[in-house]
Image 1 (tube, each protein chain N blue to C red):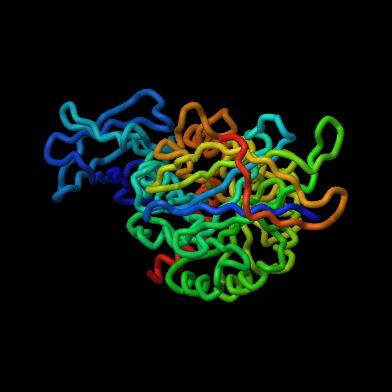
Image 2 (cartoon, rainbow over the protein chains, first blue to last red):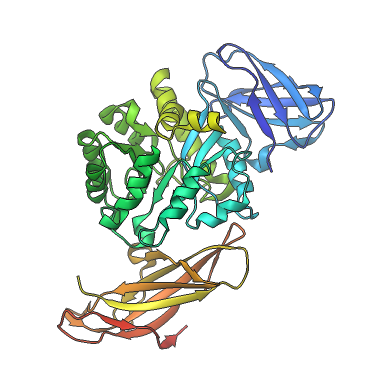
Length: 343
Length: 117
């Protein structure tokens, strides 16, 4: 498992205390860091051990930066998150609205890889789902900072199970019409969406050519106009589909756009057109394993990594818009603050 | 829309299998599949015990040299997620002959003859 690097305090944008807890312990710890994707100059500051397995350092000159990238050293030993480094965002606590974890296994889709990936991108919490709901029963979602969706297969997933999982802490439903072979406006979905509406939970739906086309998702949204429906990926396909997804979101107020596999320029276009309140950052991590957010060759349309794209995106947005897209919208739509308080 | 149905099964060989998908393509007989452009992917639900089943809805006809034919190849492989790792079965090819030509009847096949692995 990766170490934990986190801000100890928020509010002051000029200086803050950072905390580290990980496999390097004792005296002589150093924080090696840079800003906004390791832009020069790279700096070092001593970490002071203040409790067992807890070291802190004060970081200054934060106000003109968006993200801090770092690793921890002691003598010649390094904790660089398995090569992925650690990132902290300065202006917000980033939430990823689209994650997957298959269970407790050690592979790229397991909880350990997802934790490393999230730490490398400064993701403090996320919304996760898996094709078999039972696979999530064996992981500690709370310590992994994950909020779960119930994967619904219409006509197959018992309504009783959906209600039970929502009552146990799941925060919404996940639909994947493509892999599960049904159309997104299938009337067999209605009983499930009625359960979601009664529970006040949103529905996330894979959006892509064919059965998961945004035209079908829009018809579903029209039948449940008070239910937030999130188009995962906005549209995983040619640009014309993203344009249609955007047009549907403009006309249907309960549709929201999630940005996994969209380049920063596309995300900016979505925000400009539909407004900052309707766009949620997501990544589909850790489909590409622990290196998901910074894989080389780049995995976002083959041209950029999430980590580089996000720096460019955040630099181009005002603080309020960045906070909404990267954090506040997911909190509001998925009710995360309420869920955390109830827990 | 009418279609031809073939049921595929997969038996979980371990307790830590976290999901199984089947990927498939149909082609005219003798042609290679273009997995990147034509692949269809379906989740295989666990139906009872360790057995997963999925009914694939296949076309009644494919186009071969400008002619419609009810004989074609089905190519498929399994993607198994086990302990967070993706594993892949070999790709299989089988010949499919849909039951009726130029009709809207839906036919069901539960077995398949493997002609090449």
